[in-house]
Image (cartoon, rainbow, N blue to C red):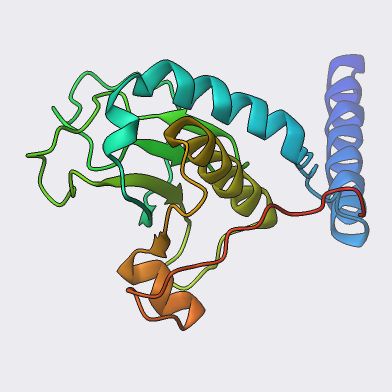
Length: 186
């Protein structure tokens, strides 16, 4: 056997052994996915306050309620797609990690499905039957608190949209008690 053939056989055996070993180790002890750190309520509330105070001006005083609707998973505030809707059917969005964003194109009173007296918060979700994560609920609560502060109303009614109401077993017309979470434990 010549030296070149022996070298290729040795390298081939080495590659096969390394590949087999890494596959075996991956099967025995797969690495768990790195969980995203859950943002604190104070951090998200600061983000929500800046979004709401920048956007509302005088129009926030006209809002009489808040509606929480379900929406598709997107990449957050930035999207590289050239073709986007002219108008969003929500005012604010909460992504899968609980971070709030404003609608790229603010819906006017005549927008389809948008009540002129309702501030709409769209919450991203993966599946049709999955509830909001704890991080998303913190994001929703922060936006509601910021809306209460800007509108000057301590009794801004909050309702779940039809799909969220179905998941949680609520009547879509039921008003939610939106007291902020105590995030000091956990």
